[in-house]
Length: 189
Length: 189
DNA sequence: ATACCTAACTAACAAACGTTAGTTTTGTTT
DNA sequence: AAACAAAACTAACGTTTGTTAGTTAGGTAT
Image 1 (cartoon, each protein chain N blue to C red):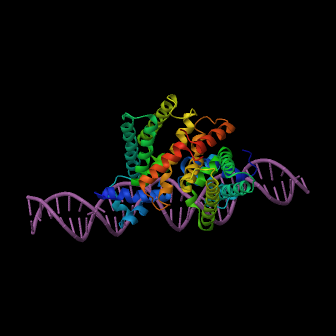
Image 2: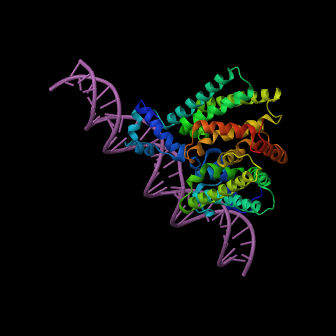
Image 3: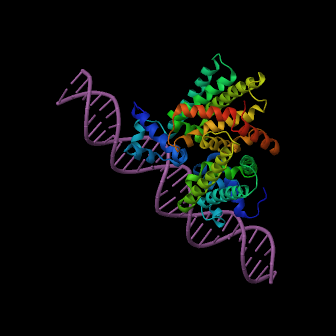
């Protein structure tokens, strides 16, 4: 992870602490200690603790949104789109697991417009995902089960993959993608 | 939810707040307000904020442990055991979603022996689950894929079911069990 | 040298935190 | 009516919280 500005460095260190203990349990003094400086010095680079959370979550949410837009524009089948979405989540898990943890666990600590904007983006993302599933069902490519159950079972696995990916010795990404697609789409029986 | 003692009532109200904002973001004054009393009054019934978390998480962890023990003792196939485990998780989701949220999100805020004891119970639970999967593979009842990937995809879905169950209008439990078993075991394709 | 910017520092603030001590209210039992 | 236990209260404590203000050290450009 190459870091260019002092601000980005702070946000990165903070994200690691957020991942471990959650936003509310991490203090500005914790973050400062990780940087080897005093808490007050952080404010030469960032506006507030809240700004750190906001940058982490909203930037990542935009990545998901643009990833979805990109995949939707492809001329491939619904099932292939779902495969691409699985790969998108895995790439993000591998490269930005700390921000992903914040997005998953601490989004409710965003304030005002940031909170509203995040919720909107998430609803929008799920809506597009659901439509791909529905289309897959309508052309007989996906089993005619409640789309909501399918959407949820895929998303909940992908969203919490970061918890598990680190624990089990960081296996090969391409292998992981293959296995994940197989298990999520074709089941285990 | 029938509540018998004042202490249980406090723990229940606290669990609802923990589910919304997480343990660290909830103050004793928040809990007191929910009870219609002052924060200091809580201490007539509980020892500490930490005790609330400990009761919530460890009691539920014991439910999982005893549920697993019960299912393991049944004279049924590995696949049927997994079905029973899925049903166990769904029952707990429906009846104790608040405690489940605490167990999922705030276990790391347990202290000392409680933390150690929780981690041990969780590792033990996963170990038994994994063994059932492995046995299913060895007798050809489950596809010969990495057991870890199967375990994770099932568990991550079941563990976060509480987030989704409330949102989508509390559908019938038996229907949910049937759909969940179908999607998790037989896939969507 | 001068000025200037970056990034650290010390010191402090007001608010919020979990918790304790001691007291009063409330409702039930004798 | 007196006694008792349960459960509330007020007041306060020592810490920790996010944050601000003003200052200082180190490097770069004029």
